Amino acid sequence: MLNHFKYLLVFIFIFLNTSTSFSQCAMCKAVVETGDVTMAEGINNGITYLMVFPYLLIGVLFYFIYRYKKSAKN
Image (tube, rainbow, N blue to C red; front, side, top):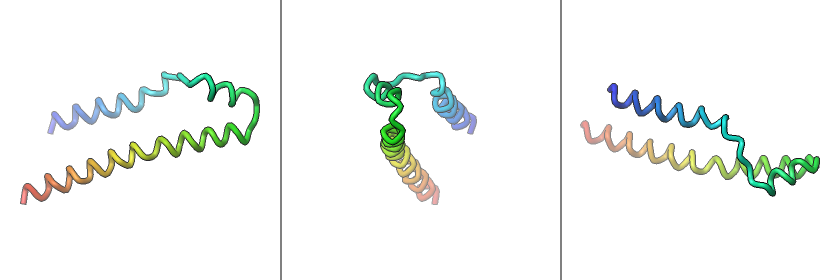
């Protein structure tokens, strides 16, 4: 149980600590700084769209691991 808690803390630390990294590609930064609001909204929507799928895949993976371990106990 303590081992799982340690991994959970490391996982939380890594994902909450990403606010300190403000790196951007030069093209995205240049487009956003031009002041074109619709283009900036499009870039933000695209980033959000691309960001959702890795989290969904990880969530599905953890669900199947959980289900497998639960069935292995029975």
